[in-house]
Image (tube, rainbow, N blue to C red; front, side, top):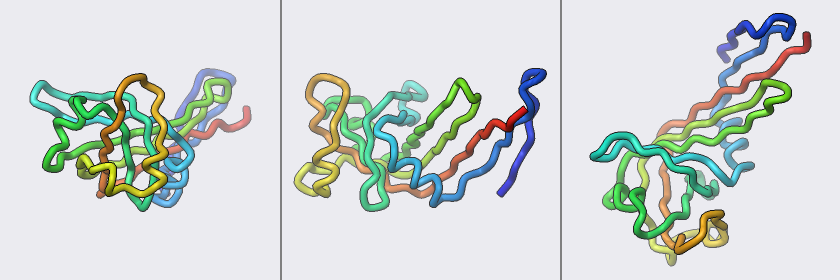
Length: 146
């Protein structure tokens, strides 16, 4: 594990920045229901918030069947999903990024837990995208006591 001390504002003491193991990253992803999905489309990078679930070692996203994301993923496409947690009071938090290939999946071919994935955005969110993960990375920033 690669730890790096970074300076903070005077009197606040240094923080510790540490890489997370893949198991730690998956554990954190399983605790969240919102993240951001990113991809590079014909007009450049796109990043949108999504509701997500981790099921069967894949990240599942529910979105509109007419979204740019679904259009981009037809036939398989490279995606990255980022999720994080920030504690502004303690100036600490974590971030996990998974990258791989995203594909729309017919709702009949998904695990039951994915069918139950709720979305916060209104409207038709009947499309499901499965991200088959090829890379997982994460970091945690932990505040030290002064």
